[in-house]
Image 1: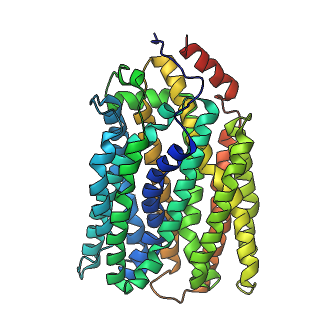
Image 2 (image 1 turned 180 degrees about the vertical axis):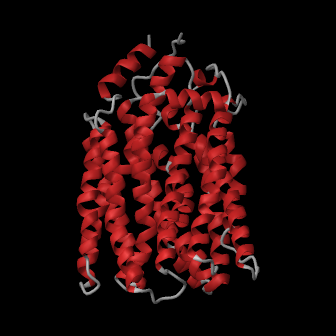
Image 3 (image 1 turned 120 degrees about the vertical axis):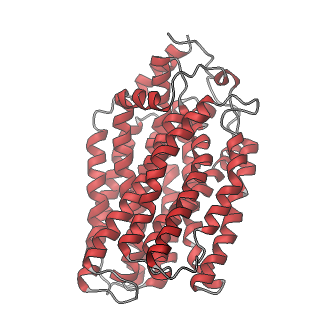
Length: 452
């Protein structure tokens, strides 16, 4: 039995300035997530901290074990929060300082001679970062379907958020140059960690200021605990289909992210070109986002997801054929083509999640944004950890070690995994997207029935 509530025809409070400031939240959290997938495990832990690749790949995987509990739990806590300041927004103020401190500590030198001792330090501090990220990001993301009620409005808000996320990748890429500017080596990365820790905590004050919660959502009933919420979510067939699409795309994205620094450094042999090449790639991603937003208007989001995945598969496979002897300008011209599809593979599932939440409300009478976004946040981080572990585990077996020189076997493995690995997961995501049940017409009917 559902309780009727007013549904806005449009969202007058969501202007461009508000959406741009809201996107700072994803800029902050994605700086950390991108730094961990691009720099931390595959480069910092191996080349700077001196861990063997297998142990380096285990560090983020340990964090995911913690996330499996904390992400859905935080979602359910925010669903059940009944503070007069709101359900979601107070957590942004509570989590900002711990997040900044933990991020600084993860780049520090523990001064431990034992390799297993260093592994234990980085695993523990990494877990602190993931928990503090959870406290911020899960309530933040749960606000999206509440702030933007309509089908296309959610796509627009998520597009702004995606721009912020990609700017976060820019910030993550700058960690290595900043560390070099601050002295390089262990001391340089420790100093860069402190600078970034402060910079990542501050935006949450602005995000808290511009976000809002709808009063009619504050009084919605919430029944059951986390385990009950899990059972409901796993019985939701639409959510499970969307989950499969999302995690396949997420693994593809993080697999590419973990491999790109190795691809440029050891296959192309141009380590110094990594940051500028990634900058060109990310500019193409940001430039493509408005195009995908325009393409999504009047179309079903699952179809846009399929189109973006196929675009990425087509151009991504071409990386296998790029040779170290090619002039730099050819590589700088080709890599942005991969970014065209990359742009929408993550955008569309997040934009589709709000419709799943509406469908669940129609069936149950509850608003469980926190639970669903908590599970999606966990999957977002699980995809990254799985990708990094797969990459470093395989390369560990093939002889990848600290130093500039790698064996030919290792170089060929990096080349083929960069091109073929993401394409394989994207193809599985495309298969899951076929016949996706919650399209635009179905959501229009859900909104009409909720508004009775």
